[in-house]
Amino acid sequence: AVQEGERTLLDNSMILFCSSMLTGAHDNTQLPVLLFGRAGGQMKTGRVLDYLKSDNRKMSSLYLSLMSKMGLHLDEFGDSSQPLSDI
Image (cartoon, rainbow, N blue to C red; front, side):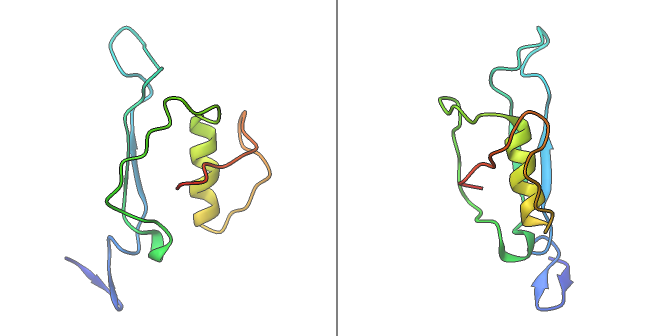
């Protein structure tokens, strides 16, 4: 692990890996999304979160959550005004 101060580089990072389509048929109903890192201790790791049946299942809600973790607090982003609470 690469040390960065008292933590590792991954502890201080937030990495988002996602796809805008699930299949070659442009299916966007179940998008694979992976988050890595602890964002300086703000993110819990080692979890699987399922938003498939959530009314707030929007990528823009995820982006609002991640921006908040980085200190950017917006009232809305894209078509969302509510961040994902579990992130």
